[in-house]
Length: 357
Ligand SMILES: Cc1cc2nc3c(=O)[nH]c(=O)nc-3n(C[C@H](O)[C@H](O)[C@H](O)COP(=O)(O)O)c2cc1C
Image (cartoon, rainbow, N blue to C red; front, side, top):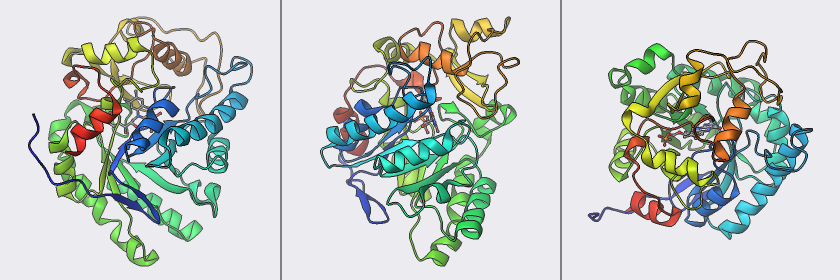
């Protein structure tokens, strides 16, 4: 039962507007593609497609990952826009750590992505790569230091600033911009303070460039109370990922969604990723197995700029593709810290209604 709340305000990013200030976070590999992102946009939100190995089910992927990923980026942006029917916004999440980062940005821009959100590294060259296009850009930051560094560098090198900023906190799913030490005690981090500090450092650039830079907060946001809390801290919107997995429209296999629904607190674990960052995932047979043996890599999928297949404990592309296809015992299932609170399947429409009202 929901009590009536004031409707959330639309999110304005430059000349673009999303009726609902909710971004569905990009989820790779293949968890957020056109079906999920299109449905979120159709509800007036911002649907984000992850470009990480997005073409994993395209014909010829085993031979040519880069080519298939480019084809799939274009195909899924177009398809998501068709599903959205002119409502909301459709964008992509492109990880800086990807080997073909530049190509993914260029393909997304030429396919008409409304926004590009970029993290897992510092997206220093993103302004140059999008050039004068209409695509809006946002870095993902987890600290004031990272926010300051990026905004300062973009202003200095490219005489421009971010169109919006995504702050990703320690409760997020996937790769995390925190040390394992910090992640051991997330309740003691006082992350609300960090959020306020990150928000305060944008003022200088808003004034310098005469624009408003909306701030979006992500990580463990579960319901309207959490959204209201972030808005009270000064956020203009939120990015939510895990909750969108247990929806009919999510692009992952049904077994993946069921793994979320059945997850308990004891099943959530911080792991080390070949990306070089910690990540949060479901503790399954795959994760338990890694405690004793390394999984030798039979084939390299050329996904990461910095990955040595001879020394990493497992191939992240293979582990994520196995999971999204439904092998949730032997694959890597990323999840946010509040995954244990998800108990049932829903639809994007119902979830957006629940979050907004
Ligand atoms: C399954 C899964 C995959 C993710 N993949 C990516 C990714 O490819 N790139 C990225 O920047 N963030 C990724 N994230 C992070 C989300 O975009 C989002 O910011 C975060 O999970 C928000 O926290 P929440 O899941 O608690 O809502 C992923 C998260 C999940 C749960």
